[in-house]
Length: 244
Image 1 (cartoon, rainbow, N blue to C red):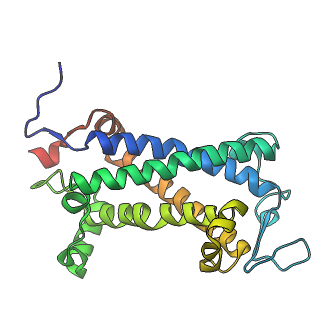
Image 2 (image 1 turned 90 degrees about the vertical axis):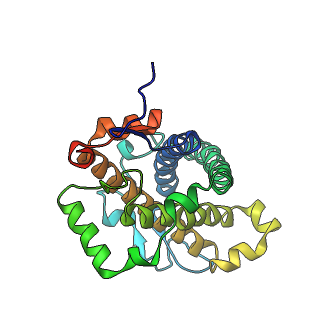
C-alpha cells in the first residue's frame, strides 16, 4: 500500500518532474563521457572560426593529464573510438533536447515553474540570502513552515540549469553540426564561429558536471535515502527537525 500523505510525509515531485530528472541524469552522464572521448580526437580549444595544431589554443588536455587524452575511466567508450562516441553523443543529445522541451511544456501547463521555481524579489534580498546560506551551513535545507518549497539556492541553480545551461549546450552542439549550419547559418554567427561554439559547449558541459557534483553532495548531506525515494515515488519524508 502507498504511504498516506501527512504532515510527516508529503508529495513533493510530480511524475513529469521525476521522469525528466532521471532521463536527463542518464543522458547528461553519457553525454559527458562520450563528449570527453570526442575531445580526445583533438584535445585543444580555440576561439573564433578556425582551430588547428599550429593555432594558439586557450585550453589543452595535456595541461591536466599525462597525455593529450582523457583517461578511459572518464570516457564513453573507455577505449579510443571516435565513431562510437559520436553515435552515443548524438543519440543522447536528441533524448536530452526532446526531454527538455517536453518538460518545459508540461511544467508550464501544470504551473510547476510558476508555483515552485518562481524567484521572488524578497528572496534575493541580502538578508534572505544570508539566512538561507547559514541554514545550508547548519545542514537545514528546507523551510519547516513550507517543506514543499524550494529554497532560493535551489531555485537559482535549477533555473540556471533548465533555462540557461541546457539550452546553451544544445544550441552550441547544433551550431557545430554541418547539417544545421546549412539550415540555420545564423546559429554559428551567434556564437562567433565553430571553434567558439565548441569552446562554449565544453565550458557549459563542465558547469553541468560541477552542478552534478554539488547536487549529489547536497543529496548525501540532506539524507540520500529520503531524497532518492522522493525522486522515485514523489513522496518525501519531512526531516524530524522540520516536521516536529
